[in-house]
Image (cartoon, rainbow, N blue to C red; front, side, top):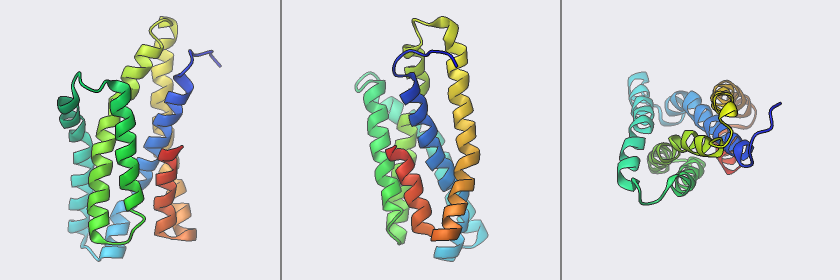
Amino acid sequence: MRLYPPGFWPLSASVACERFGFFLLTSLLLMYLRERFALSAAQATDVLGSFVAATYLSPLVVGFATDGRMGVVRIAAVGYLVAETGYALLLADGAWPLGVGLTLIAVGAGAAKSAPQALATRILADSPELRDAGLTLIYLLVNVSAVVGPVGGEMVRAQLGWPAAFALSSLSLLV
């Protein structure tokens, strides 16, 4: 294993944990909406699609609003806090906590989405021979999280129920 500069492993772990919770949530959201809120397949798909679209559009809005004002580290930290609040709201059963929670997760994920690449590039600036490998490792961790999150989430949901699955996504962001 390569010796990466200080800060690289915590950054990689934070990205993996955030993506774990996100992919866990998105994999279960459709079923949750159908089961708990009795939405039709079309309605539940609209909610899921809107949520995913918002997570991809929010970096543009957040980036524009904070450009040059907060810095990458602060905006990532605020993004994680906002998303964590959203995940915590999912533990409450109801339509308004779900709507507000999903909105906060989309905004928070958007705020934190561009930070890992920028921070990794800064951390690895003095080690150009590690830059490609380091960024590849972060993407690998994201993809592993995309597999492990849904599987782990469904296992927890099947054994302990919806609140436990959402608590797992919330805890992953706290880690």
